[in-house]
Length: 402
Ligand SMILES: Cc1cc2nc3c(=O)[nH]c(=O)nc-3n(C[C@H](O)[C@H](O)[C@H](O)COP(=O)(O)OP(=O)(O)OC[C@H]3O[C@@H](n4cnc5c(N)ncnc54)[C@H](O)[C@@H]3O)c2cc1C
Image 1 (cartoon, rainbow, N blue to C red):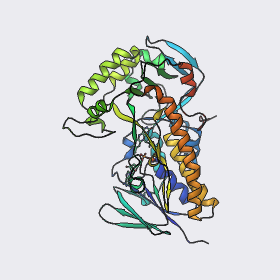
Image 2 (image 1 turned 180 degrees about the horizontal axis):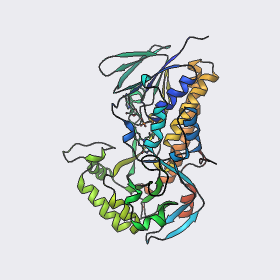
Image 3 (image 1 turned 90 degrees about the horizontal axis):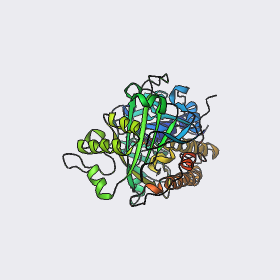
Image 4 (image 1 turned 90 degrees about the vertical axis):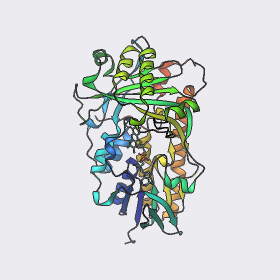
């Protein structure tokens, strides 16, 4: 029996939990260090699921059932006048971040999950790696996985020059309980994904499971994401709170200035189909994010690897962030098993394979979002083509619960 290996996993979100769980199953000892002390599941908005994500959840021992996603069978162009233009039989399984995170976290032993522990720095000597935590504690392992997201501390140490780059537009997101929807929404929106194309803008909206994964009519929620061009100066203003603090590319929702939320809601009533304008207007606390590209040129550094959003963050058009994190984790553990725990060879293999996938995701996301970039003319778009190409159907696949 080879000696048991120990992995330090930095970040206890979706990517970190998948990696930790798959490594345990492969016989590794694992320890997850998560900076946030609170319940992550309370945060987040809507996301898209995939067959790959559900396979990974099941393999990780999470309780999986069709209630984790809400299935619509059609995608439609919702025109400005509120009527349906083109419609195609393209399905989506929408969900929310908390709905996916919760069963994954529940499947993982709490004794191995160290919440409120931030990693500040990493040291390594060729065959082992040490994480230095805030407060000075040191943890030693054979492998360290930086699953610490878009602003990864681990990545900054090895690739200080790599950072998210604004794509020139932002997105407002929101979720509304089904019972709070305007009456017109019920017949029009609850059995399809809707795509709306104001000039140089895009809204994608769809029903998602309710707070308790309840798919019954009346208990679901409705999610939208609204992409709008914003110059660097406009973004600086949007991401600066009332006290004058600039939050960079992401601002905690309660700190978004009230006048920006009010202006956005007024615009919604002016430029969106009436039913959608009404929905946006009714969301009490919208989320705001800058749309960025993040692309790491490398993912392995000795005994340290990057995984999930710490290495690549694609624009949300590909709707594949959680699936990519799951596939990175599965790919890493498959490489370790295939190389019989020759860690260095396995990490090289992992890097080659996952760099290629990350680049493909980023490139498709750029293609889908190109017309939204600031300064673009009101490009003529073919709505049907957008409905067909949206997401990343060539990279991750639709769920089939049949
Ligand atoms: C609370 C939350 C809500 C989200 N909501 C959505 C959503 O609604 N829709 C969507 O598409 N995507 C959402 N995401 C992003 C989504 O999880 C990722 O795109 C994808 O799943 C890949 O996840 P990841 O694990 O690589 O990174 P992330 O999910 O970003 O997780 C990184 C984790 O690392 C932790 N961390 C960061 N720095 C350190 C450090 N120095 N030491 C220890 N821990 C650290 C963070 O607290 C975080 O939990 C959300 C992420 C989080 C954390």
